[in-house]
Image (tube, rainbow, N blue to C red; front, side, top):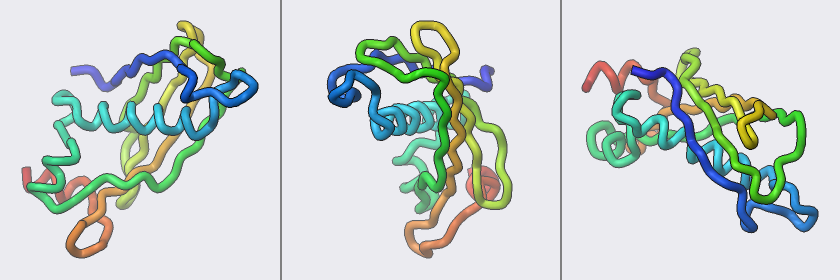
Length: 133
């Protein structure tokens, strides 16, 4: 079982600003996509949206996000986002990312996620969901 998940994509016109550089919002959307796909993977326990909603009345919520780039990302860069679950502290679960452009490491990111109860409007610990599984 791999602890890492890799998401591959090419930056297109929707990701780019008027100067040919990747917009922050586009990069953050791609990082969120990678996190979602990683959480849904069977190797990670399959914590996809539908299962969480139906079984536990819970959903993932992005609480924090940070990134750093060594160089700007440009139109048609072939990106690979390598991500893994770092661990949790209290109700916050952390995910790390390495960002590669055309095979070269160009940045890193960290995001903080929480599980929230749809019905009670309260934060949940991951252990409360995994114990019920």
